[in-house]
Image 1: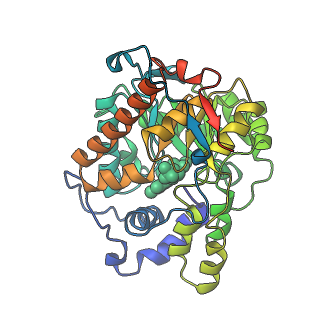
Image 2: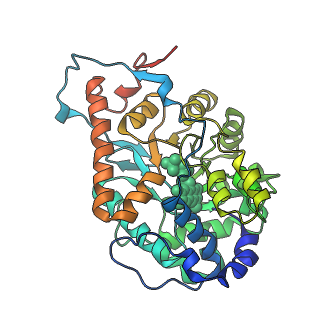
Length: 378
Ligand SMILES: Cc1cc2nc3c(=O)[nH]c(=O)nc-3n(C[C@H](O)[C@H](O)[C@H](O)COP(=O)(O)O)c2cc1C
């Protein structure tokens, strides 16, 4: 995610600083080649390091799922083995309704992480998004760090670009190139006005973007998904996006990773730290964003991400009308430990979801959406 100005100029200055400032805490399994000297990757490397080393969870805000309870059925009238977690999203079958949310790429360690994440998605039949490919559109050397089809030939694979880049020179043709670069099934455009606003030199002109997103939807042969990055989608924005022709929305609400907190840690001067720090509790909690968007755009598939941390959160998101859930931060940290740790983390999430479905008498995800299954707490 992020801004072109920073990638073009700020990163040149950063590249001159001591290289150990950017060293990551952990290397994923199977060490990659040395860091690419590509200046455009520096900001993404900082983002990754901060997400691995600092607590960047939003403060004073939750994902909102604690306000709901799934109806327990002591007599579920089905066998645990019969529970089928499969869903179809964007024309592709997922064995479990989980997407490893868009995160990284652009330099060697990120490429190694993408391969670990993608191999796990392939093994478990999940979806996966890459991080913003803006840097790879600018210089082809970094494209390989986003390419995972050799280890994940069958997964639902989502390309990624910042929607605001459409106001800064990225064209529908560039969007097509991003999709083709990685053999993606769909393009995700992310909306991150707050992140752009709190980072130095951010790309903050979001005017006329709905029209440009509509042009991308018309130009591409693959579906276009729009997501936030952790502050949620309002019903007004959901309607604008539906009118623009998007195929699905990922609400990416508040309660998990906070990008103003990430930018606060990245900020070099106290004023920028204070400005970013005030937004630690900003955004629409994920459950609320999901409920409001479900009502605003009843026919559009929704993905629920932002602060989901258990399979019960996933079950509640499905009950609230999401087709699938997405998780980013915790899966990144697990993948940075090892491929095995990531696999274990995903197995736990899927098993929690299966048991939540079993104990609500839901043999399928469709049954998890039956009326009355989810109660809002007083
Ligand atoms: C290290 C990292 C990098 C990210 N980079 C991107 C990105 O390039 N594009 C994007 O759409 N979202 C990006 N995100 C946001 C996630 O996709 C997700 O919306 C957000 O982190 C909230 O989910 P979480 O609370 O499960 O982490 C990134 C998240 C993390 C942790």
